[in-house]
Length: 325
Image (cartoon, rainbow, N blue to C red; front, top):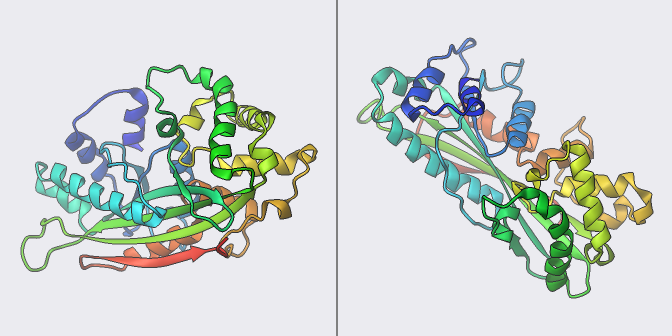
């Protein structure tokens, strides 16, 4: 859509200009328009794939990508809570920017746009013990924006070994990730002003876990192979690791291990635990959705609920959780 094209072109416009152009796009089928508010291109593509805007049975119509408002990074225990806080932060900032726009653009938001935010939080710990939070890799490393990402190819394998050895103390590690999805919609304020900025918000959470054997996490060759596997998938672009929400890409680790029997690890060894997988979906695809912060059943729940809401408020729509390790 327009905002994504502007982003790629490098052309900078005031937020109100981008909003005015985006918000006047036609709502062809009468359903609310989904606007993805996400970080990476991978997340945006996964949201589009999962939400299926415009298709029969989808609760939303067109699809846009919103990139004009910086949402505060929030550390938290679950992806659902973090997605909720980010959605609230985004709603306040968006309405503040709309306050200077004319009436037609505020009306285009009220009862018409659904903004979706996704987030994944990750923890690592020994089986049966507490988890240590893991942030984005660029945060974990304290990487300056001026650092050449190519230098990380040599740095990261040893860094991962040292970091995980400190946590594991010679034991297998459990990696648990929690993905949250929050949908926010502005609604009419019936008691006062039509453009008061009231909104309704729904959010949900989905948790999963996987065991990584100590003999792997302590092996520099394993992490070197993991990086090479990722580079082959991404045309040699190491930068994707800097933006990974989990610090390590669990779906890459599992894919690498399952495709290369020389590591001597089976699916049973990993003890991968996912919430109940939607009918007709493979475990691999659901894992990929989950890791990107966009599990189909979680997103469908928040979208199907919020399109029916017309009064302000916030509702926790529940969690999908695998067996606790």
